[in-house]
Image (cartoon, rainbow, N blue to C red):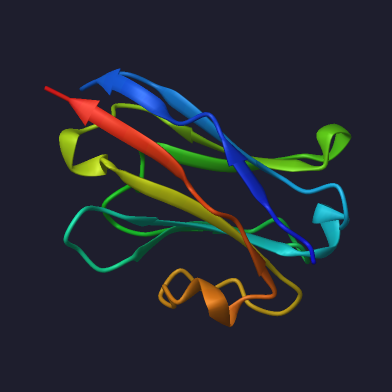
Amino acid sequence: DVQLVESGGGLVQAGGVLTLSCAASEIDFDEFHIGWFRQAPGKEREGVACINSDDGTTTYTDPVKGRFTISRNTAKNAVSLQMNGLLPEDTAVYYCTADALLCDVTDPDIEDYDFWGQGTQVTVYS
């Protein structure tokens, strides 16, 4: 089975920066739409961002728009999520997904996608 691996999470002060990475050795990321989702304690999972494999279009949800940037690293077969100006409410487990058809930040059920990872914890303290 293909398993995506997220990395880069950690503990950061509010206003700080973290860059998450999503990678997998078994698939070519350039052929898949890659999404990021997050789930905070006691809350529903929500979409964060997606990058389209067809034209490189990026989509962000309102809470992160202007602060987060999703991008591809083709040389490393990975996708990054740079998170600037982090807020305590960004604290969550962050998951990435890969899908041949879907690039949908409104669908938080990661099992709807072809592949997903186990998540990486991001904790922002004030």
